[in-house]
Amino acid sequence: MSAPVGDIGLIGLAVMGQNLILNMNDKGFTVVAYNRTTSKVDDFLANEAKGTKVQGAHSIQELCAKLKRPRKIILLVKAGPAVDSFIQQLEPYLEKGDIVIDGGNSHYPDSIRRTKELEAKGLLFVGSGVSGGEEGARHGPSLMPGGSTAAWPAIKEIFQKTSAQVNGEPCCDWVGETGSGHYVKMVHNGIEYGDMQLIAEAYDILKRGLGIHESEIADIFTTWNKGVLDSFLIEITANILKFNDDDGEPLVTKILDKAGQKGTGKWTAIAALDAGTAVTLIGEAVFARCLSAIKEERVRASKVINGPQREPFRGDKQQFIDDLEQALYASKIISYTQGFMLMRETAKELEWNLNYAGVAGMWRGGCIIKSVFLGDITAAYEKNKDLESLLFDDFFNKAVHKAQPGWRRVIAQACLWGIPTPAFSTALAFFDGYRSEVVPANLLQAQRDYFGAHTFRVMPGKENPRLLKGRDIHINWTGRGGNVSASSYSA
Ligand code: 2AM
Image (cartoon, rainbow, N blue to C red; front, side, top):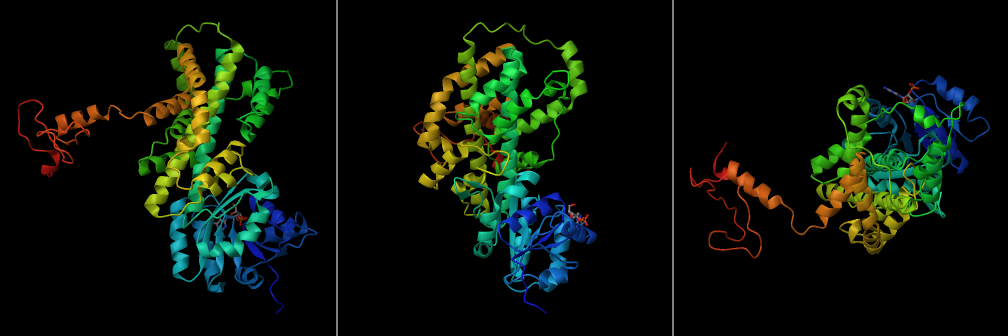
């Protein structure tokens, strides 16, 4: 048999898989393609891949035989059992040091498990976030690989050449251990939910608050896209708002206001609750979609629940629009701050060495949340890889201070108008909580001790013989009952 020619194999010839193969082919790599339904291999070779270096395989054995060592095989199949099934089918034909890469939408706990299982067999596993949809896969996606660290040198060149490039830098770097690639992809999707919700709230305020028509709102977004908000989502929002139906009406005004979701935003919110990290903005973005989904109930409610009489805006309109830009920017800073706090917390718990500067760099191009802003996050983590939160970085610290007055004015005005701003408002509430040396959790602790004898600790500087430092204290608040604390009962 002739020497193997394949640089990398790919299983799963749906659109994403086909596009990623063609992309890797363009970058000079010889890809071997395989699919469960093998007729798709022939179709692909005869059509989309015609005239390329792409090779076909009609069995797993043939696929493995055509690959140079260490073998690298990307799975782009439906997340779940199909991934495990292919790993099982591949194993008999793989040798020590070969690399299985899952580029699908797997949930990170599966990637943690698969890394451990394959490493125990002397194989290497990579779970890679792939973002940017079909277009990204074809012309340069954001790639977020994590897993067996020993695999990185072997796949680095293919991955970094295949990914999107921003200012000559690849939107791909090694994320970290085990399931971290898919974890970071999940957080990326949650952040995408947040960014979209913030833009939707800004649109709502401009439309229902200021009474501005879509065509003019499009111009405002176009202007914003030249400043600190410069990003793909702002750009496409301007284009969407400009897009008219045949009767000249903005098409967006005819779209039913019921948002769908595939669940990765929800995963991020659940992960945040599990980690005990206040990722409130993504949470609100998920809930806003839930509220949108009960359209019929909202229609009924709108008939019987009145909001405030909406007064026409009498202030300086341009000033308010500038404030709104700052409100959007500040809220976005909070959302990313929260997202990175979540990754930091999980990394601590799972003992991952996460490459935070690299993560922001990977998101700079090729994906939905790509923006200039991400370059600033990369810079912040390059300055200090152990940064506690983005708000401690000089650049972002100055930015939120500058944005703060306008941010508050916008939310106050929206409240008076009765226009919901769950994402803007939760961002500001987080900001005010985060910068508070003292929060009213003292009262919560007192309540918990009062009704449940859950005990509390004394505030530094307030110690006395009854309130001893470093001790779990229980007070008999009512003068009745005993002094037994909750930890003394075995409930
Ligand atoms: P198919 O073309 O044979 O259906 C996206 O659905 C990709 O995942 C396709 O390549 C599809 O293969 C593959 N796929 C989906 N479910 C699968 C399964 N249970 N086993 C193997 N491949 C699967």
